[in-house]
Image 1: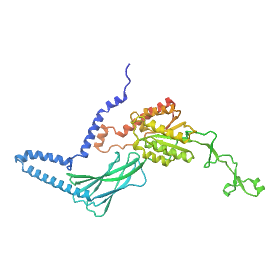
Image 2: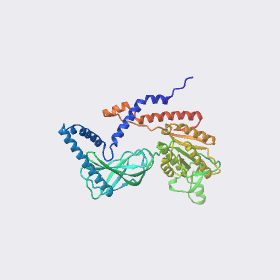
Image 3: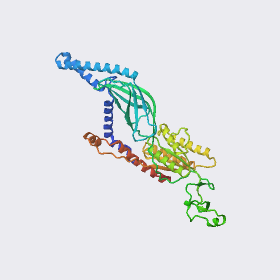
Image 4: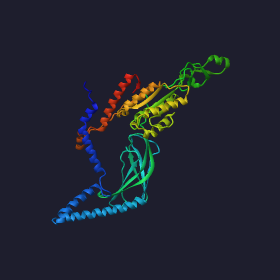
Length: 456
């Protein structure tokens, strides 16, 4: 019996040339980005190799006066530039001070966040420039660069716009300062320590098409909905001119001489909790935003919520949209999709908390918010299915709320170089989007086969 075709193997075979080109381009880019040896830049190292060839060749044999003049002149320039940059860099490292001004309000993932660097003592000699970059504890933020030159006695402020790929508390470890000459021959680098954090929230959304799915219900116990009075007009209260003439109880007026009006009695809705759990790490901002929007809609209906997320790690469950938003931001760095058992452990912690909060009730439904990008990760769809099977064995029906893949739009390449790269290498965003769509379709088919409730 022949083995079924392995699509992953076929894709790996087809993508081998592109993957090789992509790796070669990445290696070349890294070499050109930060080359060099100590205070010497990459172009200086290349120049020294050329000068070494000239010294061992034409200069040593005294066959070329131009080569000898050029060689000794370049050596003198490199030595003088190196000495000046190192001495001035040591002085700046001692006297230069910098601080970061971060926005007080949380930013949004994928959008620009403006901050500034305040400098004091930035006295840069002519023909020298100071490049400043932010050093984050976690990788992923957009590159930041501020170039300073010239003399200044007072305070300088350099603004920069950064973008962050996902939510979280992005801690800034320091400011990397690099003093270099205008020709780029030498450099002197040091780091100014900082203790600043930038809070990034998921992209907000206020529309939730999900129906109200109560996880627990109390038969016979009702609560009054004071915001939506739709009952029969049996309630009587004092008349107000805005009530109109039709609502006046004329019999009561004839007996008591007091104007009274009828109003609908308060409608009744069953009381219960909505228990929610999101499976969203760094790639789950869209699912987190949908979960917060759904929590806001439940609070407007005067329903109670109990929400937690993957990576909560002992943090208390949230009972309000504001607390949920803070929990999602604070826990993103503790999510490890590759760690087996984390989903089941965090879900069991949430169910135990619900059991302690309401001992007389049992959670019958658990809403699971999952992003399509999470399903595209290797082995994650199977882990989520295993979690749903475990929940079903505990008597808890899983209800999946899936977010669709984010549509990405790419403009056509304009330059000849970009067109050539586009033909040879498939854009990484397009490949990820295709994987997300295929994974979502496969997961929907599995849920349909197991008869799990799904909302997309």
